[in-house]
Image 1 (tube, rainbow, N blue to C red):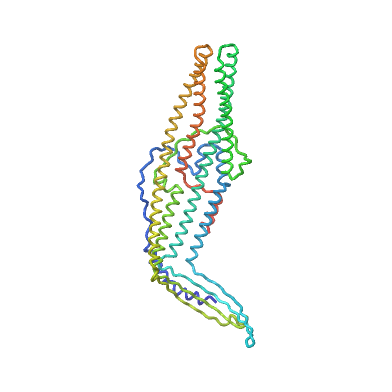
Image 2 (cartoon, one colour):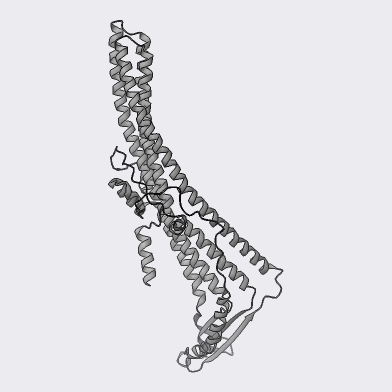
Length: 467
């Protein structure tokens, strides 16, 4: 039944293939990005950065939290569904490269005073556009590139999510450590208040000294309340990132910030451009725009299509397949007058391509800036932490000496109170700086990180490659 159609297509395929190759040969590659890359970053370390960069902190609880987020975060799942949509659109567009074959069947009944008949019909219709200039191929490749760009966007979202988990976890751990420190400081301040009240009872201290110390104890209690509120908010944020309700959360209990890992090997900017998924996504958008420009150009050329059909019509179902009518037609569509619409579309597509190129160049510069900013901040925070550690030793010695002198009546309580406040402020600042240093390292890892995929996306990609 379909043999006439097959023979017709077979006669036309050699010429179509030749014209298709000619059209593809005239295609141009996308222009290179307008960015001059530096030869190296300002600083580097020894260990190579791992894909699972968060494991560098050697924090098992952080490792578990990141894995749970990659599996359960709802925003990442939504991003994965956008990836599936893009892949489906690419498959739908690629279907235009193949012939369409439709089957029809019908029954028609006519009744009148002179006619009483039933007609049966069946047939097959095939159509195919000869992609002489590569227009259909360009549109198909553009959607395939967009699907790849969506995959890169999904991988970039996974990198961002892992960074948010690490930062939120370190902030939560730091708040718990601040709570422990605040409880210790409250106990210290209460003990000092007991001493001053005893001295006041014997006339060795003034009432102003007691009031000042009571004010410090009250401020310590207020600080504990603030820390508890901030801790609860961070728990809520972390629970939502994990895809859980913030009302009931079962988060790990930890109050120790991990040690800062050694500085990783930053590599060279050219490697960064190839490794970062957001930069790959931007470059794939450039390539997709280039394919759309090619399609817009070839859309001004004539289009050729062929249609073939076989049909049968009979008065009874038993006679339906006895006689066949075969039709083969060729069509040509030539744009003649369109008011400049097609030419305008070419200009628009060329401008879109140039926009994508400039955006890609800006993304590359921003990526290099992120690495350099993280390196500068880490150097500055390391120096600050060292300075704070030296200051806390001096502050502790100062407080101990002034406290001893106060008990001996050599100095006023104001000096002791100031030294105590300075020491406690430095203790809190050191904790905050350690957490900020870890956050800066997370920013460096994110700026250098490559692709991260959740299990479902990895499985679907593997299945598509096997198919």
